[in-house]
Image 1 (cartoon, helix red, strand yellow):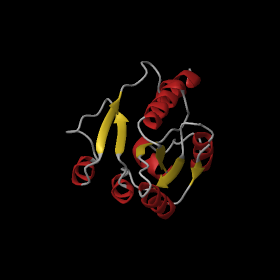
Image 2 (cartoon, one colour):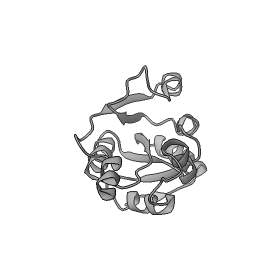
Image 3 (cartoon, one colour):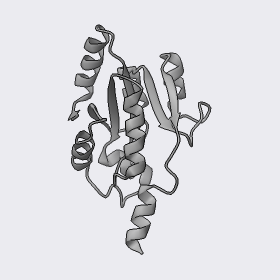
Image 4 (tube, helix red, strand yellow):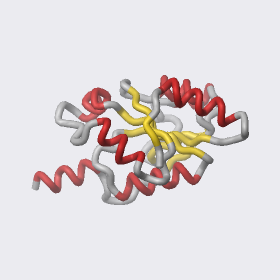
Length: 155
């Protein structure tokens, strides 16, 4: 089971664990209504390193990206749900649209992103290149999305 940590705590954890050769894979997202696509994505992220870090968009960050009606679940609830998954070791919140600043601080070995991105379209491209962070693009599970779930509920 994971735990919610501050940005300072995750930077210290990564720095200390790296001394003993441990590796870190990080990803980011809103993870508003968790579905099987999210779970498989997070399992794949965890399989790439000793520890997985989910950089979770704060409520304000989600609103900037998705609009005023989102998130459906608040950041504390989303963090708790993520932390209940065995494939998530750490959750850390960030306030910006992009996790670039946090990624620069953590410097994980691997950064995972959905396969709808390429290195050329990746918003965090400069950070990963500058810090020699390997990027792994993960395929989505067809038809599984939070937007689809919301639309289905709205009928």
